[in-house]
Length: 87
Image 1 (tube, rainbow, N blue to C red):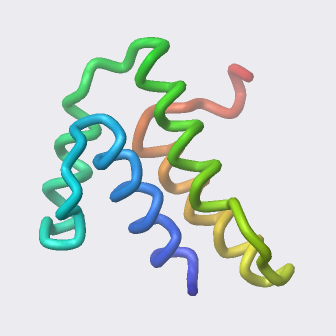
Image 2: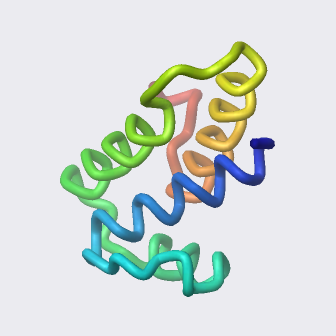
């Protein structure tokens, strides 16, 4: 899977966690991104984001797959407004 594939996966996982929609594959990524961006970004939101990221990273992966997954997660963190300079 490539970076955009992992980005799609973490966004869909986040959407599933915050709204409980099990049919997340039927929804366009743009609509999921809009939903995530419109959600209240409180501490619970960021807890859920970490859970979504963990689920995508969980399991055996090659070095190339981990690099792609981390690239996708980086795009997701940009979407939700995490600023690496403030960490």
